[in-house]
Amino acid sequence: HVSSASKPVHLGIDFWVPEGTVVTFPYAAGDVIRRVPNNGEPGGWGNRLDVAVGRFVALFAHLGDMTHATALTCGRVVGTVGGRSDNGGWRPHLHLQAVSREFYDENPGFDAYAATDDPIVLHTVDPALL
Image 1 (cartoon, rainbow, N blue to C red):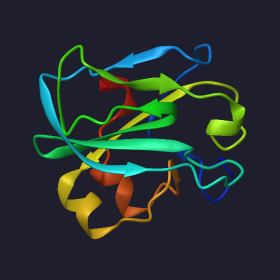
Image 2: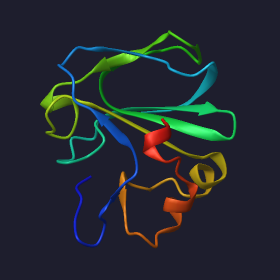
Image 3: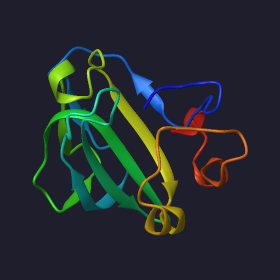
Image 4: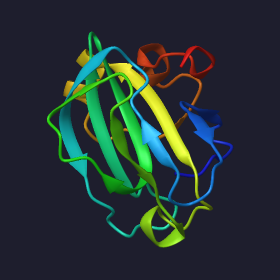
């Protein structure tokens, strides 16, 4: 997922950290609803773990390893930050994005970038609040 003139809005926040950095769950509780394996697409999500948190779904992308847990609580390990081969060719980092559960359920193919008038913008938590 790469920003462009047609999709200038980055919908998550990126934490640029070393490969292998342990990622812990920052919310009180959540249920793992999808594990998306790396499809090898350049600029893609890499390994992604989607966790339902109340009315929202938190996406943890560019992971190397992902937890096998079905439920998470604050402080539990989500996974580790992957290297370039694990995450679409990006330098190691964690992408965290939260979208409304309603939008998530109805639009499975969304991206990390969007046009300013794209409906996902209205269904995404402001990255500054994550």
